[in-house]
Length: 184
Image (cartoon, rainbow, N blue to C red):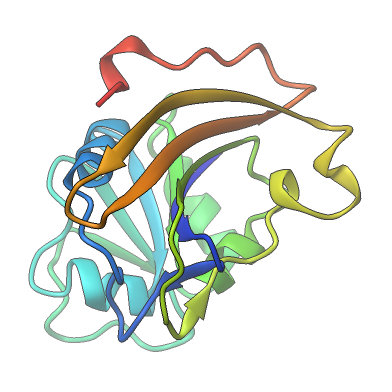
């Protein structure tokens, strides 16, 4: 299982249900990386990204304690438990599963995630949603169980800051080279 997230220098991942920055290169990376795969998100991420329509060319799964809204698109799967998410994903063997947020969902799936794509935005932002302390970036397992491969560094003119996209993977997994097609 994979996770993909972007965080600011001070750990912010969201503000008022949206990203607090506009970095087209990172959005393109997200689109290319998750396309034709399963994306798993919480209700708030669903409401901010795809309440009108699911993310295109992906299997969308929402994990929430809330009931499925009547207006939710028919092709969005709705689960109330982690176990229900896994029941849904079993119907799609050999398709990568990406946790795309929010903070609570990253934490719920932490023990199942073997790969993290993390975009580090080298600027502080105000926000109301913060990145969870995912294993590659903190805690006891940070230095002993995780490998990393920097995919790309670039400068965002729109945000006036440096950005790095890094892939972390558990040492117990096969070597993880960045797919060439994903470089922005």
